[in-house]
Length: 547
Image 1 (cartoon, one colour):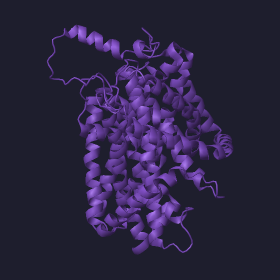
Image 2: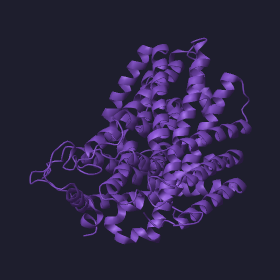
Image 3: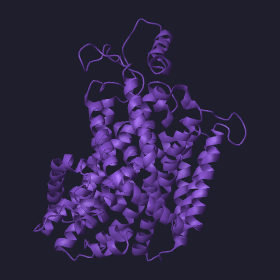
Image 4: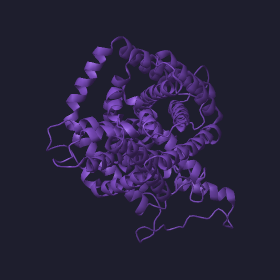
């Protein structure tokens, strides 16, 4: 572990990093609350200055990560295991997928699954003159798949795999700084390593705060429409308090209990919501448009991946692609560490195929059904979704449900979605709380319970202050801009991982191990203690990374 205090209030934590994190949060809250206009202007100016650079820098970085992850999952290192050679996965495949999706993009997909296809339908640079509205709807779906699909999950999966590899295969603490051990050596244990991890804490804290804020506003819209509760800051603060109490309780109970059970419940609720939309919505259109948009997405993936807006004079690239790639990068320490925490025992091939393909497939189905229903209503039904999105994005999902015309089932389905939003907010909050404390405790996968509770309270207060002050949009822009310095760390992690992988054992023929992984039931004549010592020597950080 890195610099844990042995006594006092910060026992088990890195005292200096914890204090700096709290101070950093407080300063940001004060600036965003008391000096909202000044902060917004400054951040807007900075983003405007950086956008021409980010339009190609983020594009090339994300493209590289996508191909790099595919190579790791299919190339010579595909059999490397995140742990010992004979180690089994800690969680079942179902529990694993449920947790990584719930903590990854569950809340975002709920918020944007209707709004983004509608917004892209209204305006994007890929619709040529003469394009019919039906074809424009397919393009809008394709662009939504692109921003929520395999490219973004390549960012999450790279950060997650790298941290899991160094933590579980080389017995280094589960923190971002450990991935730079091959480059920085023992310097990762000092102030330089603290700065690296503080950037991860910053992205996690404010990423969670903005997500909670947006999700609570969407829940407020649903409660207002279904139960007639007036939209108010007081109601939003009450919802935040309830969510954080449940989230904190679940994270204190541990990953294998509270977090896993909530994530699995999320998954089943999501299946119920998707089934409802498919069976009671315009089924034939939804199936057709999802298949067609998926084919369009696959055919256009390379072109969109390398699109830099060099031939257009509009701001679409900065408003959408740069925004989303920055959002994924800003969230990657949080989601990456959580995915790493639940992925012990999986091979590179299992990990890459699972984290890249499964969530992307789920995302395509979700956006295809919910976004497709909204587009159908605009093309062939009563409409009204475009107007709702332009007026208040948080109401789009519930306006779409109302427009389905399912009578008495409308409030039932809307209530299901409200519950689903709440559970996704809870799983995101408890995963974020766990990650923050893991970083601040120097990589302890089971940080002190008292600090988990404290950070749960702190996140609730932070979100409440931002809602009252109206600083969520400014903070979101700040997080996206702050993703740039962390992207430099991501580049360093690439070199660190490649250097560490050079020590893996392989046969002369590329793609095969010199020594096959031992099966868990295999019988050997060696002494167990000697075998354990030999494995530790083979996979330990001093043997591979310190030489």
